[in-house]
Image 1 (cartoon, one colour):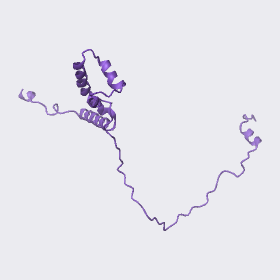
Image 2: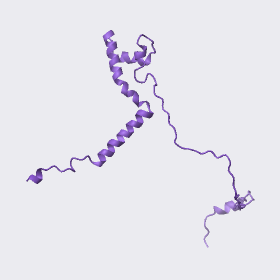
Image 3: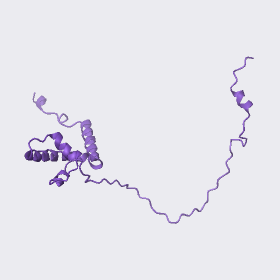
Image 4: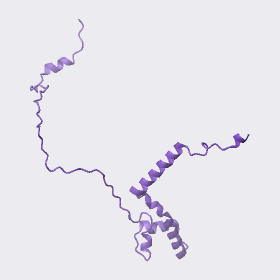
Amino acid sequence: MSNLKKDNPIKNEIPYTQVKKLFTILLLFVYLFSTTEFYQLLKLPVVAAHYMEHKKDSRHITIAQFLRIHYLMDIKDADYERDMQLPFKSQDKHVSITSGNYMPLFENIFIHNPIVTLQKKSFITQDRFLYNSFLSNIWQPPRVC
């Protein structure tokens, strides 16, 4: 009975497929945050905090009015610098993709054994005009003997 109560160490391990899935999701988020504007979504708490600041000043402001004021109208007021901290108001991250390829510079290239090419023979005849009777013979129906 005591053997049945022991925990199996294999059951406590995370399956390989879950690790692979988590690693894939992690790489996807790293890529999205570093190469796209997806990182702007991290600024969503700033929107909530700034909305609360406006709500303290005027109780009648709605979320739609707040978004219209800050995203559709370009007003430079006293809290303009705070407004520019909102998501998608400024582009403060520059993406630079560089290649790790290295091309060495060759200053002098000498060919000691020149390549000799043979004259190619063309399978196309020099006669570019094909007689009409020749082409019409191709499309004839089969003849009964």
